[in-house]
Length: 177
Length: 396
Image (cartoon, rainbow over all chains, first blue to last red; front, top):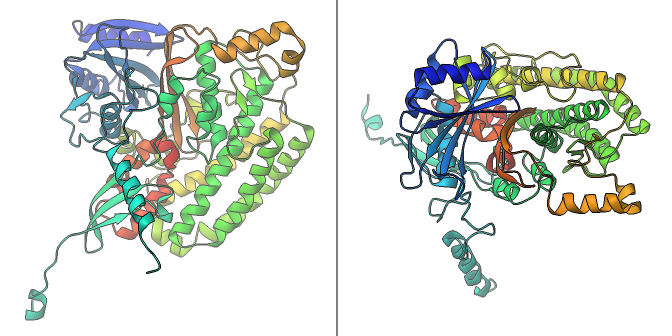
């Protein structure tokens, strides 16, 4: 199926949810509301003509000051059987950074969603293991947000401060006593 | 049950594997809960090598972010570069000339052989065979020497450029590469004699870490890890880039999806990579190695030193970056580990507004609990080897 046909089919099935369809260099992005994302994904996965069995990637994006809804969660879908691709984007406003997890549909999205939470602070409802994945548990802030400074926060991370203090302590230790 | 057995109290044991452990191929930490020798629960912890490549990429021009991709999967930096420049070229809407495409295909396949051969050596070393490791390092050394000949660097090459490659290759390089290509099948035979039918090897890998085709696709596995389960998804065939649509090669697939099948698939891939290199050398077209797109590619260095126009051009491209059409694009490429995808959102300036790296190792590390739980602790090592992860790419 051509990517635009896929988008049309999705629009037919969920006329209220689809906000925008765009094409750039042969790739089609469909922007949807976040409310029924799990239902949309299940439809894309289960429908025999679409059959998006492989989720290539899930990531977040931050459009601070550029778009009305600040965040977007981007799903790159591909069907290995039918060889067509689709980019699905769900808008997530800043005042309610919650979106349903799509882990019931593609189990491999597990760490992608954890990373998205880690980097953007988007909460995935229904995720079985909603911890940070790349950064330490007690890290403050979400680094890939556009208002997070490029050089990192002013104060050091607590774990690193501990290491520094320990090294100071050992420097004074008399190893030859 | 007699009295002495009753007095035993058994409980689950939690042990920590890594992050500094030679068999974890980098800084991967696994917390294992054991019942006897059986794994009850396996929890991977990653992120020790997180450098924020995506954030760095968003604050650099498209040209300046290229060396960052070297540091993703440092075993096969050439393939990462090729994937990156292909994504950027598609976003810019330019195309590299034929000769550059062939050269890129050739060096990418060299990278694939060098990465797979390191995988082969370390994987069998983890399981207990030392000889193939030493032999494989000698083979890899030859490829690294060839890389040095072509671009001066051995590991972090940054040889491909947006719109082509940095410099043309010499006849001397081609001769030596051809020599390597002719030797390679017999060298592979040596490896295979040592490993493929080895009883200890089969004992340790057959029916270990089995994953079915549907499940592997659902998990999002790619590369040799997916093809071992019998799915022929290969980005080089499904979305041909560079010269992959002009060369002939097969995609080896496994049947059962265990460690042994994944081993056979990767061995097959190395032979196919060798075949691709041979065809590239034989059919290498003549012509320029950089695209004629002055708005998007850096001008030749000798002209910059002679001519004012080119100097201004270079200055603007380096400081401000090119003017890129607005839009977003996701381009995948087949690196030795799997599908490496780049997702760019361009807002019309010289820097990507959003740069996303979809790394195969990240997904493959997340599948470790699925492969290991219920198995023995010794098989965890086989599973780490078989999914072929590099933590630099996993953590980005």
